[in-house]
Structure formats: C-alpha cells, structure tokens
Image (cartoon, rainbow, N blue to C red; front, side, top):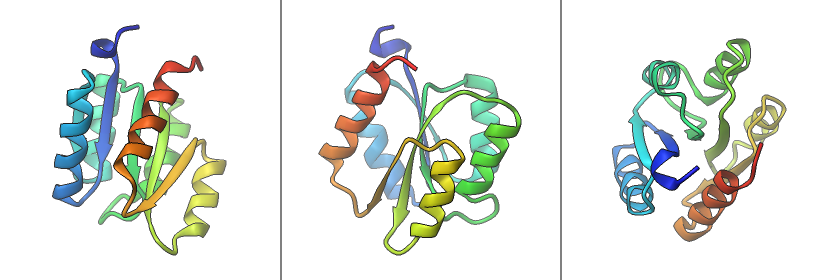
Length: 125
C-alpha cells in the first residue's frame, strides 16, 4: 500500500497541533483528516476508515478513552497512537488496554512521533 493510500486522522481540540501534524504528514504523502472532538472523529472514522489515528486524550465532550471504547464496540480496526498531557498516566494505561499502540506526552518530539507513525503504517497488522 503506497503512502497516498494511507489515511491518517488527527484528533485534537488544539488547532495548532492539528495544523502542525497536518503539515508534517501531508508532506509525507498521506491522506490527512482532522477532527477537533471525539464526535466529529467518529463520523470521519466511519466514513473514511483511517489506517492510523493520532488521538488526544483530553478533549471536551467525548474524550480519547470514550472514542477508543466506541471503536472497540463497533469493531473498527485502526491503529491508534495516543497524545497526552503530562500526568495522565492512568488514562494511558486504560488506553493501552483499549488497544492504543503507544503514546506521546505533550509537548512531543515531532520527529519521534513521525517515525512512530511511519513504523506503524509500514508494519502489517
């Protein structure tokens, strides 16, 4: 599967983070989608079936854990990388149990995050 066939969804209520990640991953050739909240993300996930989701834990309304529970309930198979603020380690543990593959603490190293996304998208599931 070529990079232009790979879909990445960025879910974060912070506009600046969405813009940064859109720029980074669009440059890599991926189809990129953005959502500012869990409900919008769920609609995009159902319609576009992204290969990988970069998911913020703390958002107004439906947070990252609730979105993960919905993915599990609907048996949606997408790789998920969590993005958390410092001190949300209890959420990280629960997110891992719900299927998140890894997590990055904000502010994260964009190079490390990009390498992890590339690694996840090139490894077969």
